[in-house]
Length: 434
Ligand SMILES: *Cc1c(COP(=O)(O)O)cnc(C)c1O
Image (cartoon, rainbow, N blue to C red; front, side, top):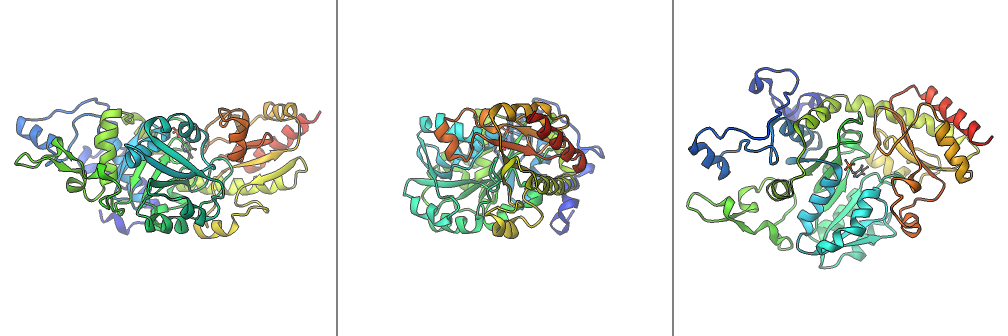
């Protein structure tokens, strides 16, 4: 349908879906099937030999999931996408795919708590070192830390939970000068606020559980391949490995780069990680994320606008020690926000609560609208005490490195009336200090 000419809001409700190919169904059908008929033995041979692309088994691919993949790939300008069962599966599969067999991932301390935990507890056991840069606001610090063992730089475009903004363009230049890709977690921004591929990022991942789906009703992840990185540069031999299941018509094994040159990273995740490690997304959950995506711009716009009003209120509250969001007065990320996030820097942020632990607990317990839970990007407004929950697994030293001080409160602003949210916070502060 000449999709490349359409704007974002048209694509978010239409890309990747042609009703004519699905019995003219208006809403994307949920193909709730584990397996697909192979037809006849000739067709089976073509499918299994990849000379015809089609559906075989839902762990590997599924028509409902495929619409979600194509829709998000289109929104982000990616060559291909792979949907997986969670944001954590997206993080893990991407980093294993790039550093499998050993190597170092260069990253920062400003990351989602689950990602930090997996870096501490699991990746080193798979032979993958994680090198965290302290001065990650300085792109040159990445250059100084790259060694011949470095396989990728991994960043959150807007960090969880303190909303630090990464200077993607400067960091991608350094990555590419060293023949390594930049992998970014764009969960907080969503493709509505930021398109990292436009700035050179090679791989983009999402926890679709958050603002992309936006309704707190499904766990899902996505891995997007820009299709532009040169995986044949000698640093990534896994892309040149010859596989028997990719053999040509005369039976010669071929590599991922030979068979899928347009999006080798995404195809390798599907062929190896989805197929063998198996964190597949269910068709029903893919459907829920597709429905959520239809209102992505409208939701994020309102959430950003509500967030800015709430930040203004918190700035006037003497019990608030600090606010970490690029729209707060004191933010060091104003210039980066102007450049990368002119439509807003998302709806999740932290503030410092000036009070004792008991007062913090009374504040949270007193709130009537804000839900106390670990999700974010939801249609509802959410609150959580990060040091005790999302980042509770970290030692005090690790919390400090991640920028999680004992007074940290995280808010994720939803779609309610901003005035009601502010009133709720006001009465919470009053009841905290009785
Ligand atoms: C929540 C989150 C994840 C993990 O996603 P799940 O869908 O919960 O597995 C990864 N990265 C960021 C930035 C997140 O906020």
